[in-house]
Each structure stands twice: as structure tokens, then as C-alpha cells.
Length: 119
Image (cartoon, rainbow, N blue to C red; front, side, top):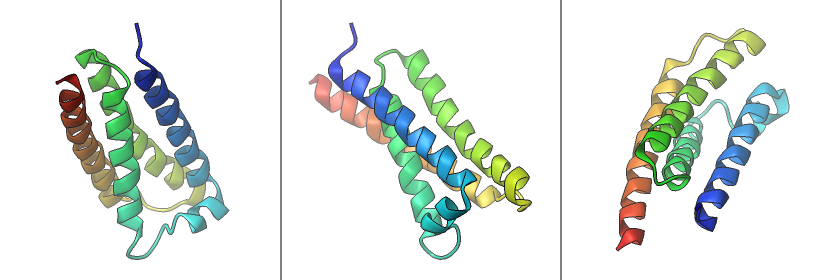
């Protein structure tokens, strides 16, 4: 049986993912998200830390958690690739690295939080 927290985490994860995709495809969304400048990498890191925590909170099964973490990492690559196609920008590997780091940090934080809540 799923816990309410798991369902909430799944819904939040889906909502955050959809928002990230839609905003990255919108010119106005890119402006709102500060796609340049000193805050840019911090937005990437914060978003993907959140996705990592939500991935770990969405299920108790390790295989599902790993699949969700991998999906979050691939989301970062996919968004960057969509920006290449949509805007003709070169692929921003530093953003992909930041996104992947955020997923890893979020996964660790989510794991620590889930361990704490089990005690």
C-alpha cells in the first residue's frame, strides 16, 4: 500500500518535471528562469535536488527509486537537447553536469530523510 507521502511525492515530481519542460521550451520561460548569469547554475541545482528528493520519496522499492533517479538525470540531458533543437544553442554540458549533480545530492538527501523517518 502506498503512503500518502509517496503519492504526494509522485504528483509533485510529475508537476515539477512538466513545468521544467514547458518553461525550457518557452522563450519567456527561459527569460524568467535566468538562463544566463550567476543564478543560472543554482536554479539547475535546486530543481534537480528537488527531483532527486522526490524520486527517493516516491517509493520504498530500490529498483523504482533508481529508475526515477536515472529518469531525473536523463530529464536534464533531454531538456538541454531540446534547447539545442529549439533555439540552436550548443549543448550546455555544464548544465547537464549540474543537473546530474543535483539529482545525486537530492538522492542522498532523500535517502537520509527516508532512513530518518523509518526510525
